[in-house]
Image (cartoon, rainbow, N blue to C red; front, top):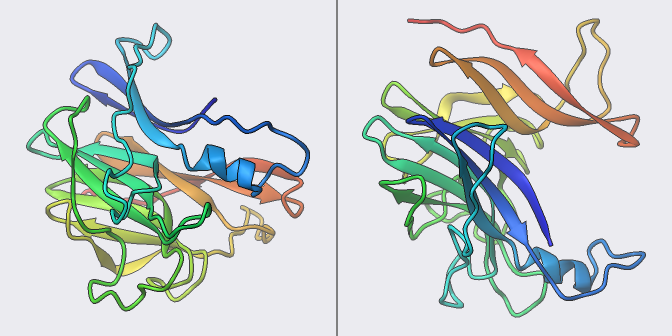
Amino acid sequence: IATHNPAAIFHKGKYYLFYMGTTGTSPITPGFAYSPAWYDYRNHQRIGVAIADDPEGVWKRFEKPLLDAGEDSTDCDAMLVSNPAITVDDNGRAILVYKQVEKNGTFRGGKVRYGVAFSNSLLGPFKKNPDPIFQDKNNADSKVWMLAEDPFIWHQRGTTFAIVRDVIGKFTGEEGALALFTSKNGSNWFPAQYPKVLSREVYDANGKKFDDKLERPWLLIENGMPNYLFGAMGIDKRKHSMNVAVPLHTNDN
């Protein structure tokens, strides 16, 4: 049993912690990663939420997933739901973006995409949008395994924004760069006019190039404005890992 990939939000005096939870029955042995047993755990990923009055206090969890896999075997998320990203728009509507994997008759599953669901409460119930987001509306990339990953979303001045990892360079022209999307309704998402947030080539303050790309983007938002971009990165060919903080210059206008 494991929980992972948390996304926390403070709303109306409460703290909400969204996360992926999974379970399985297969034994964990050497060579476990990406084995059929590993996929047993991976394919049982579901999204849960915990709530607290204080981040250091007692967190209340619930017996059932907040968001479950699709019941129809043809659903885009029939295999699993995972990696939640959450925000609340100006009308108080909760917008939940999540990773989805379709079934294709194998334990690995089919395409990896991102879906979106909506609710009038951060505790649900959430209604899923039927179509995946962060992809070509004409379905030109229907055979591509994965297009986007690791979204962070936020709502600002009537627009919902998302930063994602551009897996194959579809949106920025650079594989592994970070891309910016925007949406006016939470259902239809488009690359921003200038979509590249950060290149896959990242340098430290002294101009030395890191040997890894920045992943799992996250923003520190203060007084309604993003001030820092955070992300995870490997060190020395991923022998170690670290978090990186990138200061942002914002225009209040």
